[in-house]
Amino acid sequence: MFQSLSDRLSSSLRSITGKATLTDENIQETLREVRMALLEADVALPVVKEFVEAVRQRAVGQEVMKSLSPGQAFLKIVQAELEAVMGTANEGLNLATQPPAVILMAGLQGAGKTTSVAKLAKLLRERDKKKVTVVSADVYRPAAIKQLETLAAEVGADFFPSDASQKPVAIAEAAVVHARKQFADVLIVDTAGRLAVDAEMMAEIAAVHRAVNPIETLFVVDAMTGQDAANTARAFGETLPLTGVILTKVDADTRGGAALSVRSVTGKPIKFLGVGEKTAALDPFHPDRLASRILGMGDVLSLIEEAEQKVDKVKAEKLARKVKKGQRFDLEDFRDQLQQMNNMGGITGMLDKLPGMGNVAQMAQQNMDTKMFSRMEAMINSMTPEERRRPELIQGARKRRITRGSGTQVQDLNRLLKQHKQMQKMMKKMKGGGMQKMMRGLGGMMPPGAGGPGGMPPGGMPPFK
Image 1 (cartoon, rainbow, N blue to C red):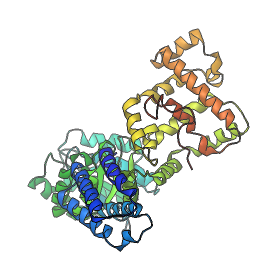
Image 2: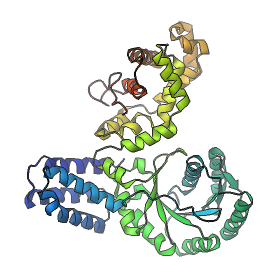
Image 3: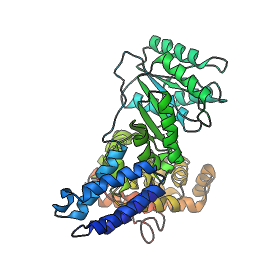
Image 4: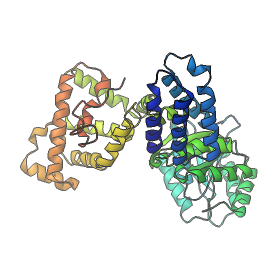
């Protein structure tokens, strides 16, 4: 995420953080590189000018000159200004109104509105324990209503049916009545998008807004569109009283221009980041944490929060007790660990949040077979319960049966059994150890080049503190 911006900023700031004293000359040189890094990341020009000027004024002032380590003080200033550009703190949803609290989703076609509706419904249900109803007022895109119905069933939200023959305003009004009868806490209204901003679309969405009077009007925008994201956000902001922004496809955005521009251009806070296709891939936006990641300092807080929400505590405690007693770590346990890791975005998703590991995550992404975990799980699922408990039984004919059943090759199964054996040895060594060491051994699955020569050895991943 934002890898090219992170690389450029980190290298330009590295040259100055070691300086014993800062002069106008070395500050100007670094600021020139910072300016170029931001422009190449597709950050809007007015935002770049304001950012660089704010950093320059603070850097040549007393704040840095009096510091014992001026280079570090300069880095802190850059981090603080990055946070200021993106918004000083996480701003959540305002749902303080008589139920149902209506959330209206607006944006261009293809930005990921419908998926974001489902992601937001899941987040509100699981994190805030809200009863959520969703409705589609998109009567133009074929299968839009059906798509939302399918996603609503997946995330456990109440779906209010609509029809392409109805008017969007009538759909939205009927949905409010339905949500009230269902005692829903929140109603999320998905609206139609167009391929570009046009007067007809804006008039229609303004009419829907007037009809339902939402407490939150969220603009959904694709981070990959760079500066265009800021321009379309401005256009929507002139028509609708926006309360916030959801930035989608952030996981695929190496530049980061939209994240740094949208807040300044619209004056509205980014509230959520879409970081993947799964319905759980919606993160509350924390400017301080993202600034830290952009500067290569990692985001351990988000990693800890993710672990708290997504790791199955019952299974984790059961495994911890097993390890403490010195019992065998079998293939059932190994499968549980793969599933836990997958829930947290896999190895690359976790490495990306660890300080100084951005490049390693990028290399892992390039070198690693992303379907590897799925294949490993399929092989374990093709085994009998007895084989999972006693992997030494898996020989000859059993190997052929397992690989046929999982659609894999014998060498894939041999690799899985070898990796399981490595992890089993590690578990024996850490008998009586803490749960934070549990995931280290999975580093042994890293491909060559992802963590140094020959990949990471078992136990090579940084420990969770």
